[in-house]
Figure 1: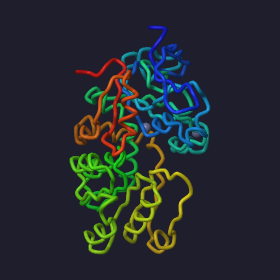
Figure 2: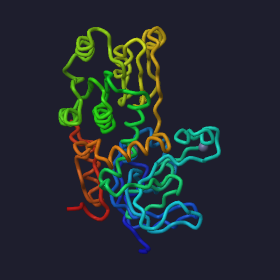
Figure 3: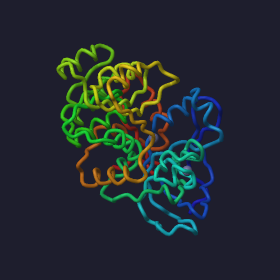
Figure 4: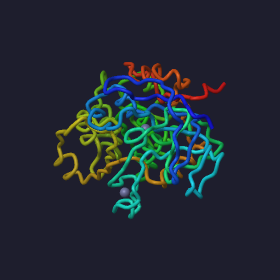
Amino acid sequence: MPEKMKAVVKTKKAPGAEMLEVEVPKIKPNEVLIKIIATSICGTDVHIYEWDPWSQGRIKNIPQILGHECAGEIVEVGANVTRLKVGDYISAETHIPCNNCIQCLTGQQHICGNLKILGVDCDGVFAEYAAIPDDVAWLNDRAIAPEFACVQEPLGNAVYCTLVEPVTGKTVLIFGDGPTGLFSAAVASVAGAARIYLVGRHPVRMEIARKVGADVLINDKTDDVEKIVMEDTEGVGVDIVLDMAGTQRAIDLGFKLVRKGGRYSAFGVASGPVNWDLNNGVVFKGATIFGINGRLMFDTWFKVKNLLRYKKLDISPIVTHKLSLEEYEKGFELMMKRPKISGKVVLFPGGVPA
Ligand SMILES: [Zn+2]
Ligand SMILES: [Zn+2]
């Protein structure tokens, strides 16, 4: 085992990150050491990279290795680890639960009261090696390529958000053309949604949405969203709204366009408190709201694994860029560039596979 490794580290309380030579992590008895094959950049990583107000309040440990979405191989197991062995191909559930609070003890580990997040509260995976607690190491199927295995965490958000209740035969309106919005369109399509509307702002991403199964693409900047959806649903509204954006506009439109008795899944995070027509949007409509945080552990993971390994779900149009870990700056630029031209950007510490 080498002593040193390359890692992308947040070194200053300022925008950016640096590639450094750091120590290979020493694992604790309940951890596994993984050699990272692929790791993808998440919106959370971009917030930390840009050093926005959220990350300034949230990130306590600097220097800290960035990143949380990964796929890799176990090269060492801690003394107390019995479930996994060297050579296993794994990804990580990034929500690290305490296993002691009321949520953890009642099957809701994903919203643990003492939740730690990989790459946010502790060192992450933008590196050649990473230490992962045994209970969040997810055993992958070899049939799933590393560039898809590493995005199972955000894909899991979309699977949980979309399938928290059945979508088969229903109309689904998605706000947001970021990766989770695109994943949601793909999942809703595979799950048999009757008609999928996607409201976005970036033409390249809207084209990806079409490829993965969205039926009606609505440009938020140029189209009349309300008119298009209401006319298409004969004045009724949609059965299901998936809010992957969390903007004031998405919330206003979403609660207006969900039909009476419909479902609103809230995944997108608002930048602060929002104004909201509770009476007409929820109470009088008898609408149901689901708050979606993370993925069910591990119900969602089994669904994701099966959809990918049996090739029922094709997410290849959404994984748009593959770079070496050294090219992380280019990766972040792709994620920040407007109009947005990337879906998921995947980094390979060992170089991009041919
Ligand atoms: Zn993520
Ligand atoms: Zn807990």
